[in-house]
Image 1 (cartoon, rainbow, N blue to C red):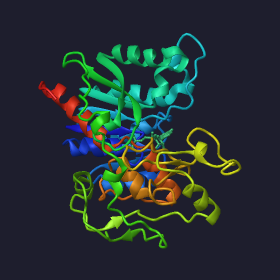
Image 2: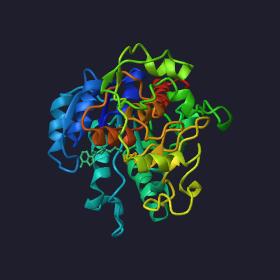
Image 3: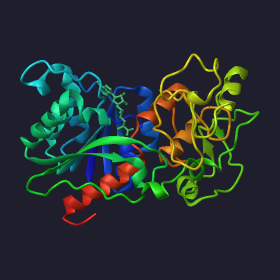
Amino acid sequence: MNAIDLFAGCGGLSRGFMDAGFQIIVGVDNDQAALDTFARNHIGAVALKADLSNPQTFDLIRNVVSGRSIDVIIAGPPCQGFSLTGPRHFDDKRNKLYLAVFDAVKEYHPKGFIIENVPGMATLYNGQIKNEILSKFESLGYNVKCQILCAADYGVPQIRHRLIFMGVKKDIGYPHFPSALFSPANYRTCREAISDLPSRINDIGKEVDSYSSDPKTDYQKLMRKASSVLFNHVAAKHSQMVQNTIALVPEGGNYKDLPAGWGESRKFHVAWTRYHGDKPSNTIDTGHRNHFHYEYNRIPTVRENARLQSFTDDFVFLGTRTQQNRQVGNAVPPLLGYYLALSLRAIIEGGND
Ligand SMILES: C[S@@+](CC[C@H](N)C(=O)[O-])C[C@H]1O[C@@H](n2cnc3c(N)ncnc32)[C@H](O)[C@@H]1O
């Protein structure tokens, strides 16, 4: 089945779809570093750098698709910029990034689509934006449902909630979200995910390096696949002051555990948060300056966060460290994408997930 990925980023969502057997024809984004990573990890897909708010971008996509049928459209438009200005909110040109997905569905009539967004979008303007998205796509001939899913329920060692819209052509069937495979009692943990990676104590490591031990858990085996080389596992260099501050935070703790006078510069709710080794991680964000390794006194490396996002070790991130972190934090965990893809494929093929 052919798919196109709009607002593809580095391609976490499309990696999941590829793993489920979909062919990604093109991934579109306006961030060059993310597209470099996308191209490196999605062999056979075209990485198209273009602005999806510009109507001419659709000519470029049309050229790449070149008459092939598109079975599925997947998209992760950024949430910022939603505004309500009048009776036809959705059509307000400031909401044009969503309109790009709508226009693509209108043009390619895929059998189904998936749109990912932050959970806050479900309640934005008392749910008006969400309801408008539902009715707008329904008017195109789709049954559409949305639900907030937690990545940990699908084997991702991370508490990450995301709002997912699934649409299925009315003559094909109804959306159906994948059932949870894990529960809080058996969620995968940080330790299960990253305890085999070198500590980087006294050595920040290299962009391309080797493993220093065998995998210790089934999840680590799954993440290594056949990788024999370790990429993107480079530690940040913190000042002694920052290291001393992190050292004062216990596993699972945060700034509230610091003695009076410490860590004054960061006091918002996720500041100075140390992961708990025996729990899934907090939501991986794009900044990565406020979360720390459960054992070592440093922020996680790009590879550690990629593991917590369920990117296998053969998925290599390109660009500066800041760009790599942004790509990882922006992504849909590939495992979540994989189970969404299986569900959608089963509906399209008339089976069960
Ligand atoms: C949430 S991220 C998508 C993550 C992706 N779905 C994944 O799983 O890796 C949103 C992406 O939209 C891109 N973007 C933002 N505005 C854009 C625009 N006007 N045209 C194209 N891409 C844009 C950003 O560069 C970013 O990579």
